[in-house]
Length: 172
Image (cartoon, rainbow, N blue to C red):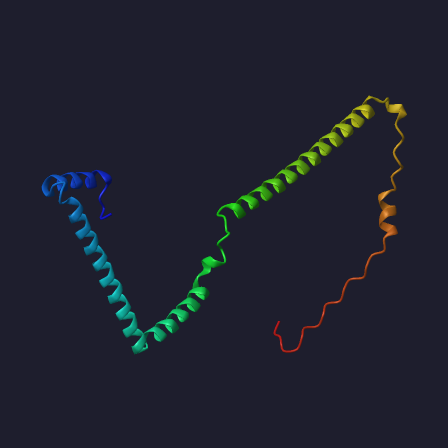
């Protein structure tokens, strides 16, 4: 009430009790109550008279139409009505979880392939070391090579290509 706390109201009541006196205090409170009631009634009458004058002048109809236009424009231009249930960070969190999951899958697949490659290299090295340990006589003899002359005679030579005649209109 008027920005006063209970302590200030109590101090004012004590001062009023001392200044006015205990006999006249109820009469003063009655007069204050009547004054506040009359002030509220006057404000209510003034507000009603202004509204009646506005109705007679047609201001109310104009205000209703302006308000309806405002509401229409506000509903079109207010993007927050579509995003009232939006939770900030929820979409980003979902995307980051999906990305982390995909990255983990890729990492696991790459690790598995690398392990397979390492295992294959070990098998190849083991097979190569076993071949080195075999005696030289156990190895199969290499196939006889054809003489170089036989290779040249087997493939026919192509005739030399003829030079193309220059196109008309071009200077060479």
